[in-house]
Length: 89
Image 1 (cartoon, rainbow, N blue to C red):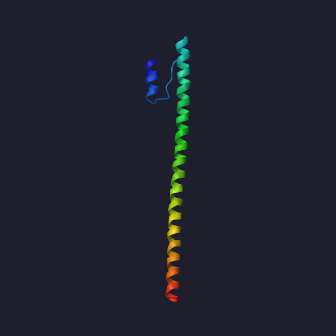
Image 2 (image 1 turned 120 degrees about the vertical axis):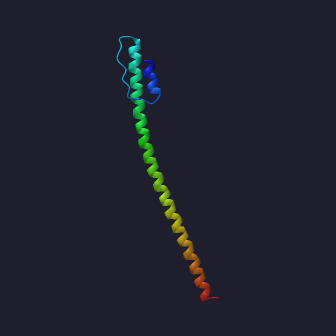
Image 3 (image 1 turned 90 degrees about the vertical axis):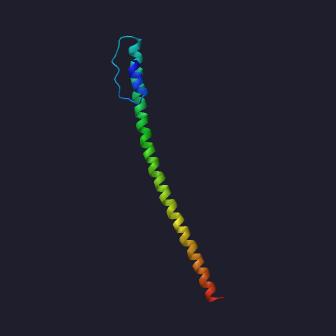
């Protein structure tokens, strides 16, 4: 039982604890259920993390686009101001 608990602690959530006919067997079954739930939650968190990384990449891309649009707009205002000053000194 101790080896199985150590394996779970080390991240091996696919352990199988053989059933026993005493309170240790009950404890083993509960530990195995907990390990399965931990594994399920870990997989869920990995998926959520991947989705967050994709969302962050999209936000960073859009941020760069907005920055480029703002630069172009500023350049347009400067050009218009210079053109106006050239025509009307």
